[in-house]
Image (tube, rainbow, N blue to C red; front, side, top):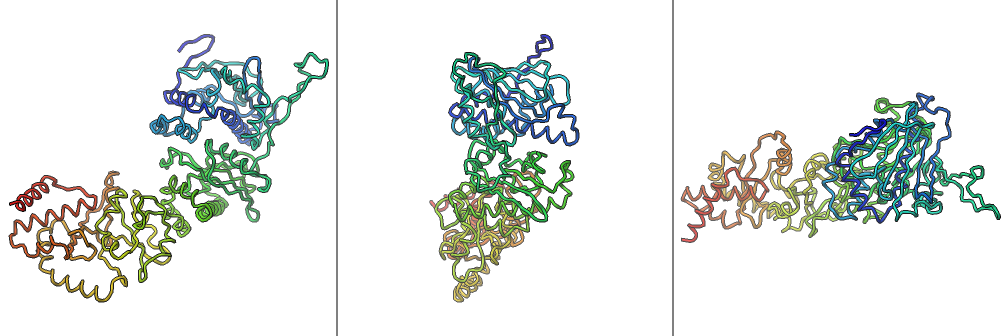
Length: 636
């Protein structure tokens, strides 16, 4: 650090250096977005001043006309964006412009691919804000004074390894950002170009964005720079978009407002704009993003809607208005009933919030349902990005369990791919005659689940089975329990009971075979008594000799492995060992009189059944020795 008349040179946080490098090299094809980001930040600063001034009107000082000004100097090739919002203190400047405090930054940077187009999308999800200025500028100067403080701060950097910061006298509160444009970015020091960008991206900003009027010089008037003749005008509508009638708004305006509230670069998949009047009065504008943010799975990160009360900004990320499983929803809610001095603590206790939360949740679910029926391709995109989060819903939101269940999608044995596109409703529509259950199989991955021996009888009879392979799936099924009056049943748990899907003759044959193999079952039970809860003959297999089944009330194998991998204690339980009486190996076992050979065969079959379930062997070396021994005997 060097000191020169209180001027300090400080180093950027490592993540900032990486982010600046990526932006400058990845976002070159869409340079103009920097203006949207900087005006959006200026709008937020004005909103924050309004909010803080609710409890301290002195923060307005002598200037109550809130605005954002955009000025340019073609000769100097500079552009400035100035707001008279809340401003920043010296420490806030260092925190906001020299570091990225956002949780998950390291994971975000780790996920970057090196592909410019893909990385540009990811950077958009992260929200680049202020740093986007370096896309068009080789130097950025920020002068700011926090409302209520006497001394201002000047921050300056070329966007490389460091920045300087020094005190400065500023008459007005707020922030002014001056971009010293790169030689190939002169287009951004042109009034017409700037107006077109502001009109495109920032027309919805609820505070006036003011520029100098373009004025043609009068004939014979050589002095066109007379300050007395300078006129200014607002170049945006300066009306909060959500307060305008839906009929007046174009899709493009909705999309640009989405990018303003989300700092996303991509369009939203869908939105819902609604005004409620009656006992409660509020307006909501809710968006479904097209891509999941990198930190979606961190349930602790701030999330939620922007809250306004009577058009006055109150807080970002008000999480009380939507449940956690809808944490991907972006947008605003503007209430006429809440107090202007409301806090997060009050929000948690206000009964009006519970009513609004219920209504907003229903609106989001209805929006998703409409997308699923009217725009299935868009819903497929949504499901790919957010499906696993929505699966948290049935456990968190019992009141809407049925609505959420209809939105769930799964893979199925009727498909040849792992695409999750089967709705429970469509499964029920094509259910087999006499079938009164919805069957599913859970595995660690699609291939393991689809190849499970438990599916053999279902394939033979042409019965559809849902194929589950997300980590959350088995837990989800325990929360759902049933759908449309039909029980959700794992084909890998409990005794197989196909009900009316088996004929009376088939049931009689099964009872007869079970009696014939009674002695074998007892012999196997004696060998495996320390490893299994029960041994029995099964008719769920057609090709495999044996399989392992969880007890009716026991935890499934997939959930057990998920919990164990997370370091959680899992209750002990032993599986049920089932044998296929039609398989030659089982028939040979019934005739085997050599007890050593019998024991080896049973142990190998048990270990193979365990492997087929995705399990691991307690003694792999013993398994290999037994298998080699049996192979040698066959070769002699």
